[in-house]
Amino acid sequence: MRHETIGLAGLRIMRGRYGNSRLEVRAPLRRLDRAYIACAGSTETFGPDLAQPFPALLEQELNLPCVNLGTLNAGPGALFGDAALLALCNGADRVVLQLTGAQGLGNRFYTVHPRRNDRFLRASAKLRALYPEIDFTDFCFVRHMLETLHRKDPGRFDAVRDELRAAWTMRMRGLFDRIEVPVTLVALPRRLGHGRLGRDPLFVTPAMIDALRPLAQGVVVVPCDAGTEAAQHRRVALDLARSLTAKAG
Image 1 (tube, rainbow, N blue to C red):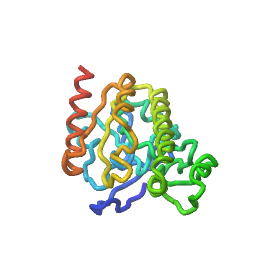
Image 2: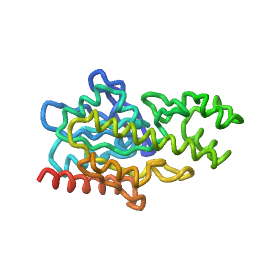
Image 3: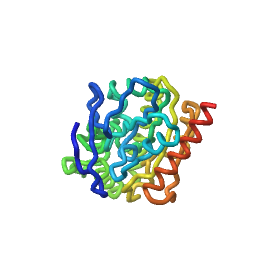
């Protein structure tokens, strides 16, 4: 367990790991010997700028432990590759899964860090051939790399965007195959998204979300104009509470 000052608000937040997991989640770690809801996701679920992100608010609404499994800068690939956190999800009564952007997934064009999915590791021969004028050793972060490619040639960038969308759809369906309890999906606006490549979750279209609806118990989408980050989390907690209560009934 470690303490660290994280986020713009200067909150001192604990992080820890459950069992053999390699992903650090928001602490304090919870007892898991009674019924709980697992809230898995990325930075928005972790809530580094909030004393009470939506899992804590949802717990108050439902009077049922809601375990925050949010991991900073993680995408679907991080959860998919962590057997310990998947086991915690499968031990829950239900799972709330944040819809994260498609940019942080390894694909046929580039590789990302397996846990910090915002980190760019290497370009494939396919991407180097598509953008031969780009020196990919200049990049440490995925968004910086993608912004550069888009700025260089939006036409060629369409191939990259299409690949990311296909990888996202495949990985999300893979998560549903591996999570054995009912899943409710939630989409929140990114905390610091600047919109140069589109809205967050990045490259994820309403049609892509709709294609997952038959697999999910429910889908909660918070609009970008839902107010401050704290207001967004209050909104998603209330919407989730209504959705989960209705399904239970």
